[in-house]
Amino acid sequence: MAFFDLHSHPGLKTLFLPQNGNQLSAWRTLSPKDGILGNILESQASLKLLFEKGNINLICLTLHPPEIGMIDQVLLKIAAKFLFPTLINADRLREMYTLTASYQETFHQEFLNITAAPRAEDDISPAKKLKLLTSIHDYNPEDFDTLHIVLNIEGGHTFYDLNNRVKDIEKVIDNFNAFVAKGYKILYFTPTHLTPNEFITHAYGNKILTKGPLLPKGIGFSPYGKRIVENAYQNGVLIDIKHMSLVSRRIFYQLRKRGYLLRKPIIASHVGLVGNSWNFFNQDVINPIKKSYGYKVHWLKNAGIFDDTYFYPLSINLYNEDVREILESDGLIGLSLDVRILGGKDKPGSIQKDFYSHEEFELLMSENADQQIELLCKNLQEGTINNGDTKINANNPEPEDLEDLKEGEDELNDIISQRTTDGPFRKNYNYHLRLIVNHLLRIYQITEWEDMPMPWNNLCIGSDFDGLVEAIDCCRNVTEFDSFALALTKALDIGAKQKQIDLGLSAEKIVAKLMYENAVNFMQKNLT
Image 1 (cartoon, rainbow, N blue to C red):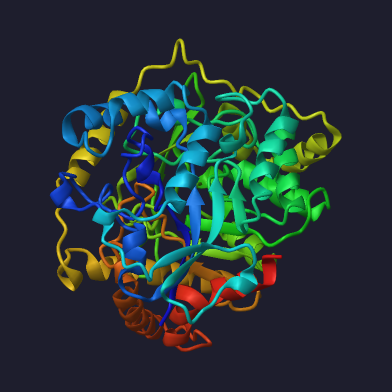
Image 2: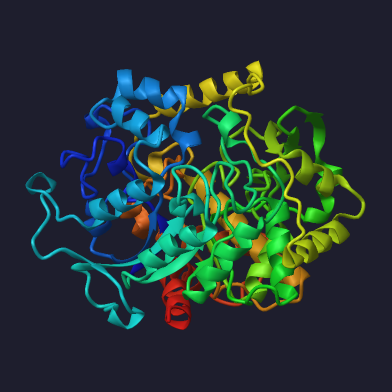
């Protein structure tokens, strides 16, 4: 059985040492013997791991220059100085967060690191090679000595013309087009990520790091955002809605419906589910607190299909309506293998914190949210949109809440105290399997509620491996895709029978589609 991953970061960890020829190899597999603590820094998808089992020969490889707000963090600086200086260098981080090296430079450094030949110490057979596809027709499904790569790009900041902002949007477009002109196939582009940008308001998606630089600002799509999305489509690159705020996603859907954007298939590359309709947003929110930077709100996890499962309620995940929009577009949903995104990190009943800009939260709480979304689309198309306060007050930021600082500290301590154990003996192995089944069955239920075709052709895995995520116990890295698929097949079959759900296909066939077939078919249809 072959396997595929829609969202994988084998090059990210190569960026945190000086780029002088001695940076980490993308082929190198990091493990606890390298002095790292916990599984976030342990390799999950190094190029060596991708070849190890001989069952992966096609991936969608993510290129992503980390944003200033992610790098300029006390935790990373401490880590560089005290914990693992052989993996993270303080001077290199300083170069990145002061943008002595621009996002464009970091982006090209990652590309060079990915395409560099393995080193002698990587111990890679000369028969193993990478092939960046220039046509999907060059993919040979029988060749497992070759890792065929289709690219994706995460974060519109990648193409800024100045170090950390846009001066001339057409120069940004030129930067995008210059990379496309290399001729390598790019399946999708994720316009926003975890920090405010000049294009599209993002959804909050952090727990460990300092909140301030990562808080959402403004509202929806800016004219720059619409321009960069239009340009991606003109270049045959699809759009990934992951990391867009809820308001931004709703605007995106309306732009498509009104014909203001092309109606291309929608990708959600590495996601989980909220477990509810966005129509209940203003009823489900708990104790919203207005701050100078926006709103801090609280959620309870939405109950899953099985008694011990829950969904992660932050709006970085998909609401029922998001699922409908993606499936109606004949798009692709990549299920993340990050335990938090799947709802399995915190105790049942624990309060989940979320953050919104003033403008977006007040819109979502209003009685006429739908009409306001439509008006924003109209104003964007007419060039009269007001995107609100999009600037971070770096000189006078609001102090961190003590409870947020304590939460981040506890989270870090929990992660670094973990130790890798083998196979099904891991503490949460079966529970994490049920989280995946919980998502598969809920997506199926949504299609039933919406009177839509079954979703089994439009799902795949988008692990986010090596993207600094805490992997689920039942699939800690890409070498476990095979055992994960077997266990998931059994768990899906048992779960469907337990809930008396007719899947329409065998669990074995659904898992085969999820792990490989759907993505290959999707790319054959959509990569021109």
